[in-house]
Amino acid sequence: MKKLIFFITFFIILSNNYLLAVDKPTELENKIFKNLRCLICQGQSIYDSQSDFAESMKIVVRKNLSNGMSEKDIYQFMKKNYGEWVLYNPEINKGTYLLWGLPIILFVVGGAIIIRKLGVFKK
Amino acid sequence: MKNKIFVTISFVLFSFCFAVFYVGLQKPNIYTPKLDKQIELPNFVGNDFFSGEKVISDNLLKKNSYYIINIWASWCVPCRAEHSFLMALNNKNLNLLGINYKDNISNAQSFLNELGNPYSKILSDKNGITSIELGAYGVPETFIVNKEKKIIKKIIGPIDNEKFNEILELIK
Image 1 (cartoon, each protein chain N blue to C red):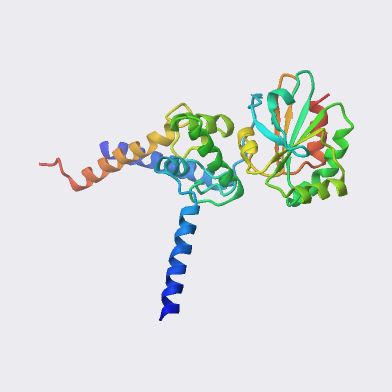
Image 2: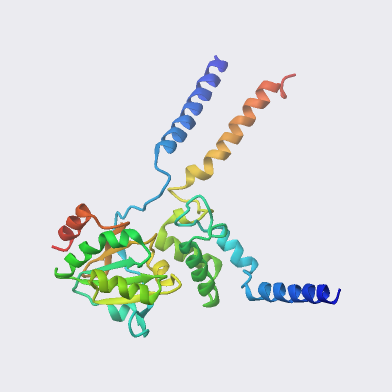
């Protein structure tokens, strides 16, 4: 019984030490990680990816944050290096208006079709 | 009449969406950036491969000279394939700057001992920060920097015969 208690205590201390040793990302860091595309596995954000380049990008984000850069500054920095493509939440501009506008257009047109079919405004 | 317009609009819209998605599906899903215009070389910091001293890009790259910045690692197989091209470029009128990406120093050194060292300077990029600050996509990657310190070409992946000739054209 004593041995069992010793092992359980030992395990708890060990796992706690491990959890403390891992640098947990803050909420802001996670938010930024989720909005940056992984350069190697391009369908994933760097938050999900563990590729070498994604890990490097996380380090750069942390470094820039500790240097006093804001979230927006970091996006600008990444955009300058990699283009709009690196952001999962791109700004509305000449190249992305279709991306932002199309769902709204489809929603309105789809809604119109449904309303028409259901005859909501028919007396 | 109204119904006809409605059907036509729906059809056009559907065809448009179909065309957009169909074209999208045909495209390769790995994005490689196009370099239409010359980009100012970003500032970057690294440690000297041999001495470990901190090096700032501004002090390293001088104007009025072409530079080739090559990101490599001893564990990267394509780097081995492109190394002979880098050795050949070493004899041309330009400076080669190597960035050793996330590598074990002794492995990197034996890589250079075996295949030769074409670089005039090598920076060690232990955690990959330098490569990200440069805007790199992977290993190997090569940037051609002109005399005004502007990136005129990015080569993602290994240098082959065709790209080698392209570099020679650019630095003429």
